[in-house]
Length: 193
Ligand code: HEC
Image: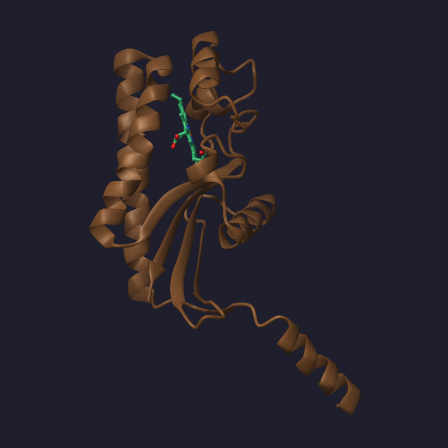
């Protein structure tokens, strides 16, 4: 290799000390998978029960309460940061992806376009920050089903009562306009190592 090229590579390395990534331990990966599944199962169950009992408009309120509560409970039980992010967020505070989560969402949307089934779609990496601190990052893809469109679909899909409720609770809402089978977001977990 030419000396000048080696120098250029070394300089490039210095300019971007950034993060190193590695594959996670299979047992840890399994544990995070279980936690992501627990979040989806618990929240899905609550949502469906509330829609059946009191209708979709009331379910907006349940989602607002239950989603952060379930995430907080799972975080408390595991000691990890557990949550959900969106490709377009409804709850800007909890639902906006950071750089790693945005990378996972971009990869998922590419994989969906290439025809991969969403059910088991996930991404996991050990990330070591320049400070030397490592964490295990995990994301599981969430794709819209027809039932989601009452609150995340286009104007025609969303009943008037739900629209009004969303307007009041989430004036900055960006999480509408989705169609069934589209990437909606991800369950995300950050586990310090
Ligand atoms: C009854 C209305 C309703 C239905 C139905 C609904 N959602 Fe939501 N969704 C909400 C609300 C409200 C929030 C914001 C919750 C919060 O404040 O944390 C939300 C937030 C989300 C988020 C977190 C990211 C963000 O935008 O803040 C994801 C992901 C999500 N929903 C996916 C889905 C999927 C997938 C379905 C179908 C299985 C679904 N939702 C069905 C109302 C609904």
